[in-house]
Every structure is written in structure tokens, then in C-alpha cells.
Image 1 (cartoon, rainbow, N blue to C red):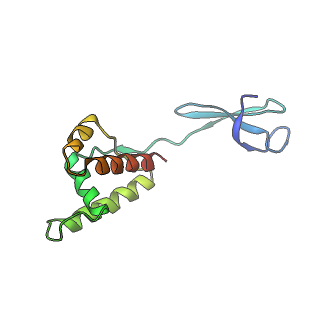
Image 2: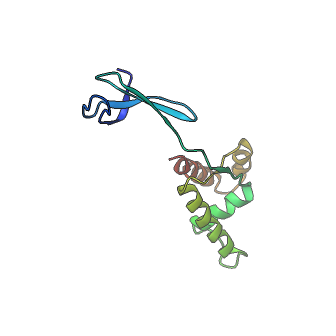
Image 3: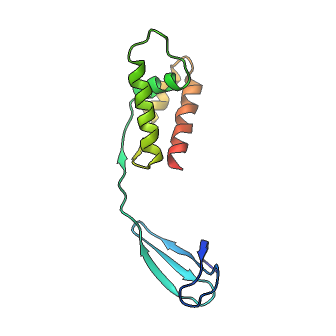
Length: 130
């Protein structure tokens, strides 16, 4: 009744698709069979994730690289392109999170394309959380 997917075959009664998730905590999760009530507890892996705070300058530079809005003669273009690639790779591997702050939002308002920069930052955060 309270079990949620994904369901597996129950190790005790053998019924197919009966062994669902009952409870999840920070270190463990429980499964229970919706047919026979058999219950088991499993350990979750330790979180190995770092918090990386990007300042507004870094966010702006990466945005310009991704949106191709950097001037051709702007310095350090290769650095920001590589930084963007490395950040994306670390995020996809769930090795880092990059939190936003109200200060980012305030500083973004004064940028000439502030709405696009704000949306790009939010989209990047959403992709990171998946």
C-alpha cells in the first residue's frame, strides 16, 4: 500500500514486481513486499560531492562562451571554454553542485542581457540536479 516503484521480485515469496521502496533516509533505504510484507534494509553509498561556488564573473564568462557572445578579441576564451566543459563533466558525474545565490540574481539584473543570463543559470542548475 505504501510501497513505491521501482519494484523488484520479492526475495521471500518470489512474487514478481512486489518488492518496492518503502522508506529512504540519508544513509539507508527499506524495501517491502506488497504481497507478503517481507522487509529488507539496504545501505546507500556515501555522498562524494563537493560544493563549488561560482562567482558572478565566472557565470557571466561561461554564459558568453556557451551563447557565443564573447568578442573575438576577448582574453582567455580558451580558458572559459575549457572551464565550461570541465564543469559540465563534473556535474554529469555528480561530483559537484554549484548553488545559486540571491547575489547572483541581483548582479544579473544590471547585465545588458540579464534575463537570458538568469535563465541560462537556472537551466544549468536544473540540469545539474537531474
